[in-house]
Amino acid sequence: MFTPERPASIKDIARIAKVSHSTVSRALRESPLVNAKTAERIRRIAAQSGFRASAVARSLATRRTNTIGVVVTSIADPFVAEVVNGIEDKAMAHGYSVFLANCHADPDRELKVVQSFEDRRVDGIVVTASRVGALYAPVLERMRMPIVLLNNQHPSQFAHSVMIENFEASRRAVRHLIELGHRRIAYIGDRFGYGSDSERFSGYRSALDESDIPFQPDLVVHGDGKAEGGSAAMEQLLQQSPPPTAVFCYNDMTAMGALKTMRAHGFRTPEDISLVGFDDLPLALYMDPPLTTVRQPKHEMGRLAMEVLLKRIAGSEAEQNIKVSGELILRESTAPPKEKTNEITRASRKRNGSGNERVSVPLVQRSKT
Picture 1: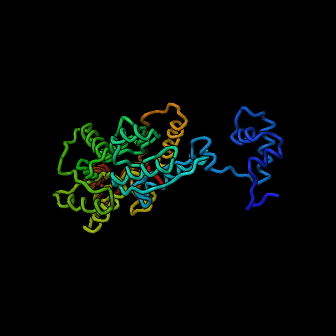
Picture 2: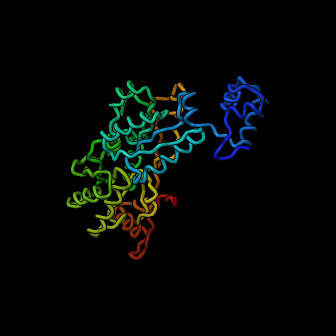
Picture 3: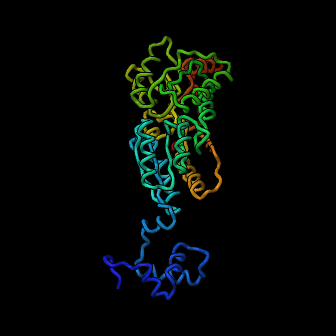
């Protein structure tokens, strides 16, 4: 009788099934070289015996560990959770385990973490928001290990990547503000000069140019991608006369900090200043007011990154650079500027011949999710 202290071995299963050790090994690996009925009988005996293949022994035989390394900026980053869930769902469906490590947005630490995963003999690595991007060329050449970059901040031609379509998503967000009637629109970016910031700023500029709205450099300030940086950047914008009527932010955390500063100075959102974020973090729905933002398909991006990695591990061709579309989610933090609202109200009263008549400003469809 087999017990947890004395589990069944391949030798035991071979004896019971009256086949060779190699036949058992092939059957448990689902090799097509074993007759289907024989393979099914061997797997049934293995299950009844409580047999579990040794991961170490399996890795020695296949030269794979069925493990994946995932490098994130910080597990405290709200963006990370959904991305990692997408990676894990795809990984587990294909029999892979996931190791997770923080690099704290430090390029040197990022490379060290990647090298530590190499020492662990993982089969592949996903790096989110990579700070070293282009430097992976020599790393890949030396390691000969598949690496996929997710939302890479320094694009490289030498690694596979999955990214949000920053430019088009940002242009659509700023177009929304322009369609509401805003002309004095600010952008709070990320001062570290990442690729995502450059692309989102380009989308902002493009939307202004399309509508013949002159670009005003004083309306562009930079935070640090965190709430504190967004708050400090908003302080600069509110010192201007007049202040902007709308602000497009690099991400939702920046928008959260900006909203706090606006409130502290007595500005209302969206009555005085409309606000748009980027990411659609869970907190965006629960801000007051709920935040209009660009939704990144975080779970899907994680799944796609893992899908590309699995192809590379198998030695198959995979698309080099995948770009996914963002979705503009309209909530209560955006509305026509005050002067536009007043113009509509005055025009309506004039048409109706009454100073007491009220008019509803056309509503933009709002998301409740």
